[in-house]
Length: 403
Image (cartoon, rainbow, N blue to C red; front, side, top):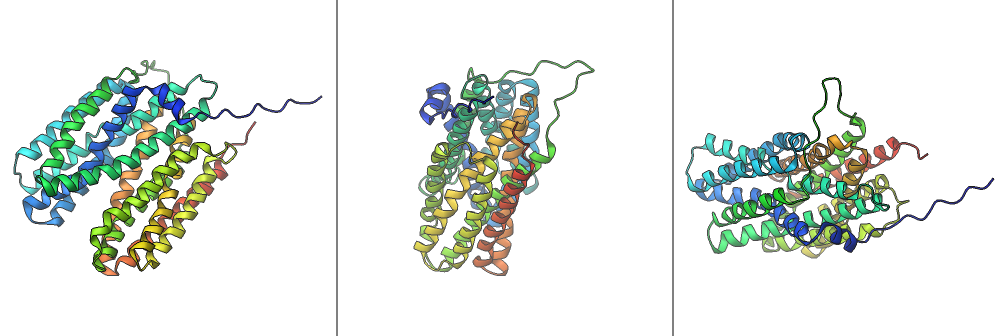
């Protein structure tokens, strides 16, 4: 008896995903990313201007990052339990109040750091909420798996664009208008984008209340831990490459090129994010993470060895092309393994790991720059890439056998 071959995998184009989401959803999804991308640099410049100390500004950014790391899982869990709309609206209003207080008041350092932490804790986690909405939209479709992969690629591209555009807006407004201008813009965008996204009809509702005898669906903790390692390591790559690159160019007197060269990597990452939808399904997400980690190792070595701005740009381009596939694949794997009642919590945990990695990478690279120089800081990129490679290989080994 012969068995019919399986039907060919359906590939969902990005245009089909965009049409399924709708223009309003996409516009709000994009706008809601910018405030988060603007806050770290905006806070650094504002506090440094007020206190005359970049060290104090760095402390404020650290408080923001630690607050985000603590609040992210909490916001995600509440969104799963109470519904995205209520949590998004409440978190946005509390964050806006804290940011407004920071803008109109001159505060002592303890209160300043407390406000920075409060702004981080109340980040409404728009990226995680958007990814779970795409997952819900895909459920029941004949092309569900391909749809989710394409949606995660689109989200990855939006992330890259926002984290390029956000710092550019901050730097431009701070230089041409005032150090407070970027945060005023971030506040306005949060009130429009975050509230609009929270009120959008796609917002997922609260899960039905469970009986006293009913328990949560089990969460595959071991497999999730590997993805957290991958996303945290990518965050270290972001933080270390940005810090090490800036220090290397400042040392050679080419610091005016920092934004341009860093942008080359971001453009490469955004392009790769869109191209990942063309990879065949047989090239599994675990393998993509492992290959990307290998590329990060090579890019880190090239960054450390580069002696000219052109060589640095080439190394950053290679690094950028490796970042998006890791992010997209990790989120796609998390979407597949997480039970529906853990969906937003899982996505938020991955985003939090990335944020913590960025803070740790920037801090470690800064210490290496002061102690051993920019080359050591850029080699940290290669070390973090090796960690991504290990995560990819481990995830591949953990993958359950196909039936």
